[in-house]
Image (tube, rainbow, N blue to C red; front, side):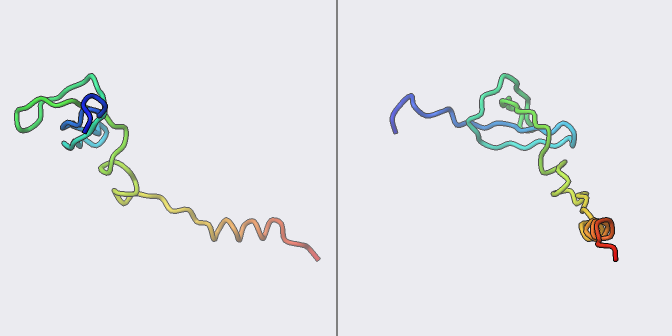
Amino acid sequence: MKKGIHPDYRPVVFQDASADFAFLTRSTIKTGDSIEWKDGKTYPLVKLEISSASHPFFTGKQKLLDTTGRVEKFKRKYAKKD
């Protein structure tokens, strides 16, 4: 590999404040914040608005739309009258 052209690939903590959820992984993202992790070391911190812990699809709180009711309502509203 050429020196100086690749971004710094390092451990980073991603934290979802709304769900009180954090995980440690490797990333090249740049951030000015840092946090002390469970192992006692300090890592760069990225704050997330949504993660798998708070997203409705992953938590099972997703709302399903009643499309059949909407279609029937539309047909009734715009049906040809004899």
